[in-house]
Length: 494
Image (tube, rainbow, N blue to C red; front, side, top):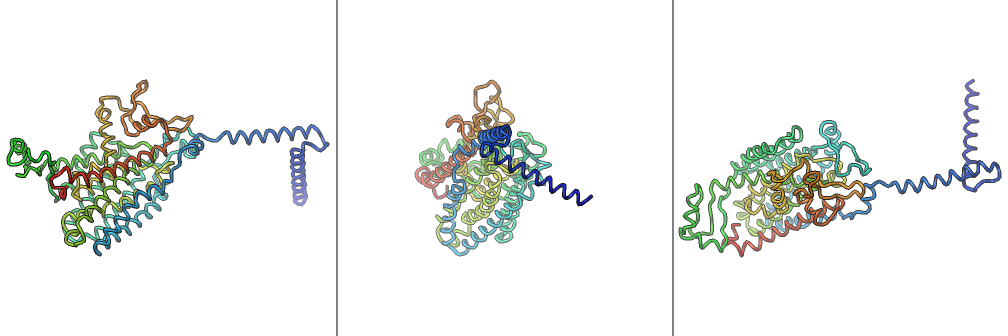
């Protein structure tokens, strides 16, 4: 019985093979005289197959078509071009003194290791976070892409944030030679840790904005208590004569508690009010990145550009001080080196996160990354002792905040999400409206760009906004470096 079953199966297999061969000959040659009906059926099947092939080509998804038709910039080349000036300046500054070369070399090595660890850890952590923290990419819903309607893991900023803090700890162990340096390292680490915790809690329980502002002030306390820099503000040349020699304007300012005017009129000491400014700066930075978001890669990309511009400013100030060790490794020179120790690992870990968050995003960063990215920028500027000029290096964030004020203060309607509107027929982004039936666009820089340049692909929109960020950084650095000589009486202290 078993042998008969085997022979029977072999006969059936040969019969089926013969039928398939006959069908192939009939369909290919238009019939050979054996059964005209069968030949016509094969012809019909051939025509149906061809039509099906054409239908498959026409059934290209909107996601694929929009990606094919949209401008595809060389993203990696653009980011390499962005970081190239920083690398060149680091090499120049490192050649000034061997100890600076050692510090920058070790920091670069730690940053490269942090980049590789983050790059490895994100794919391992993402599947574990997906069941608990996830979201759907609204910018691609209904386009037929591979992640259309798929729940993507969220809050992956916790990975880059953790590796970043570990990197700062390693550098602290290496370069925390004095109590003052250890105090600054610990204050920076504690403030950044607070920001990571706030972001994670916000992802889980959705903290209200009014509570975030209060928490932001508390997060700034370690930073402010460890600050040992000046509290003075330079006065423009044109205003200095009106403040000199105990003028009436100077007398009016001196009435304010903790405020005093230098007899020359070119320096205004704000005292405690300067700490109020720094606390406000921390609150602004931790929220500025979070409200300037809504498309893949924008939050991480803008943070990388801003951190790179602050790195350039630090390197410029170190180079300006010359090659003497006592001028670089003490005073503000040491503060700029500390700022670099914070920024380089941040850029490295953010670049690894960008690899997974850029269009089309494989993971979401959640609120963790925007909070600690803003805190890192504030830490680098405040402990680097150039917090007064930080706003020149984050111009798009300032513009976005000022432009958003009517909605942030509920002067006009504000929806829960101010994301750009997706056209599912074309796959392009449009400016979203403040409310159904209202013709006014949401007050964000993203919607302003879409209103100015028209609908565009999400990737193109992100590259455009990051290019604007880089352009503003160049302008800010130029204003800080060149126009300060003409505007301020003591540009060396700016």
